[in-house]
Image 1 (cartoon, rainbow, N blue to C red):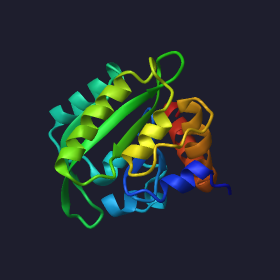
Image 2: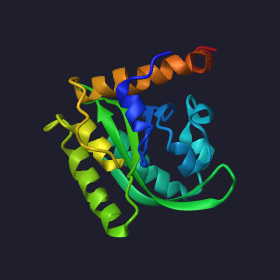
Image 3: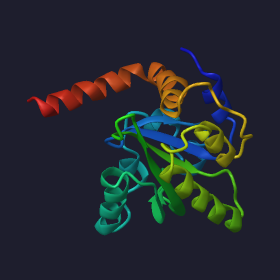
Length: 196
């Protein structure tokens, strides 16, 4: 099992990063997710985050969320009530963006909680997040550094790959190696449901 330098670095940061496939199944999460949700990385990879700690908002909220990130392919920021593993309610601001491939199709969704606590800094982050992800394909360079900085690290973390390649090679692939059997089981279940 390999750990990329970017994965190791992200695991030291106070902010959280969660990456799902285009169906919402978790492919990657950094170590800080446990402090935020109560769930370890091993408990969430291969599952839908919303089924673990979400589903506490009105259906209209989820309709707007999916309309924005899946159909409009735009970032989404909103306040949400989630439930931690210990069943305690937790209010937080949600920051989700689609990650588009070269054909402008949604390949992944990325959710970030910044590594800042002051309300004015979090508000500023929300504006930066929306602006940066609205222009991710006009200005794709520097996205990894932006994410590292938002999570509470230094902004000097470019990998030499494109943004999507960095996500796949530096974050998703090492996590996939770690949880290979679980991901294969999910693929078998998904195929069985599609072709009974």
